[in-house]
Amino acid sequence: MCAGALHTGSHRLGSCGGHATGLLIKGGNALETIGRVRAIAFDKTGTLTEGKPRITEVVPFGMFKQQQVLALAAAVESGSNHPLAKAIVAHAKSLDVAIPQATDASAIAGKAVRATVNGSALAVGSPVHASQTVTLTAEQRREIDKLEDGGKTVVVLFEEGSKNVMGLLALRDEPRRDAREGVAQLNAMGVRSVMLTGDNRRTAQAIAGKLGIEWEAELLPQDKLRLVNDMKRDAKVAMVGDGINDAPALATADVGIAMGGGTDVALETADAALLKSRVTDVAHLVALSRATMANIHQNVVFAIGLKGLFLVTTVLGITGLWIAVLADTGATALVTLNALRLLRFKGAPETSHGDDAGRPTTLSMPSAR
Image 1 (tube, rainbow, N blue to C red):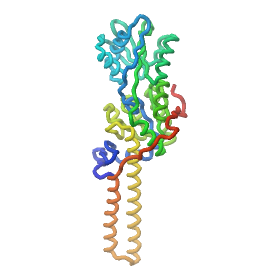
Image 2 (cartoon, rainbow, N blue to C red):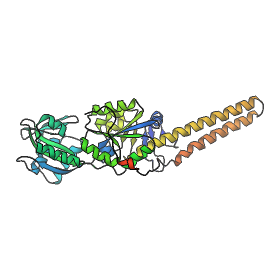
Image 3 (cartoon, one colour):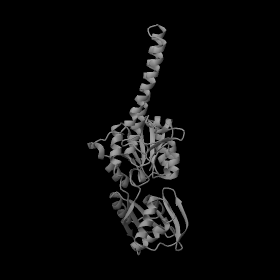
Image 4 (cartoon, rainbow, N blue to C red):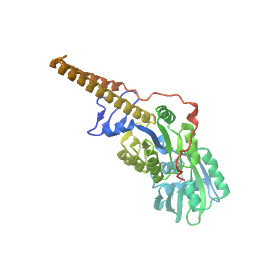
């Protein structure tokens, strides 16, 4: 394998030249398993997308104004570290909107964030959670559908006491520039790619359409865990993620791969990390593992075969002892030189996108919805 790259004592794998730089692997077992992976599950936000959503629309309802909806939503989200929450707060600050003080903040994992603002119990949640908590009017549902059809993530601001929907906020998180190429490279290598997201179906389908990847949407962390377990029944599975909510799935998969810009929990849980947070590096990681294992198998076969050959010829008196010793030393040199070929590793080959690259499909497994 790459000289000076693998350091299993400290569980590190450094760069291997060419395009495949910034790949970290925790030990030889993970390196071996990655090459045998036949399916890879990707988290969406921060993995296939930039993880930097921005607000595109604020839609008020009733007597509320856009600025009021933005201010109240930012107040509720001010204590959260979720990318959507950070985007809402940042947008409010960029417009110099005064953000009220929030108290009693709490979160319902994968569903909503709650807080008390100006004496009212408010929540910012997904449309699915909102529809289970309050009654959405036909107009509000149409507005949500229109925004989601545009590939945007929609959150609903509502008051828990009066069940009054105050407004909607639409956010867009663009796919990473290399995400489509990364998925195409994996497909060319015979590795199935699947996007798992807690986002709504329409947004998931819109992003999957750009990437040509299978998808499953509206998932809670436990749903991702279940789907990874289902996929493991048929093949070796890797999970790629960056957030705290991805940690259970990262730990459950045969190989967990964390994006370098992810949370400390994800990086600690994963078996490998992509320091440059490039989707194409997932394909490079698989290609590196396969090249390394192929090299090891070649060296083992060559070394054992040569030793066996000279053992037989020495016993039969065809060759002398010193020739056998020199041959053994030469075999060591040749094996080492063969291993050094990995220094020229350039990563997975680039691929052109076929006609099927833009045809996303849902998973053929039990629905999580």
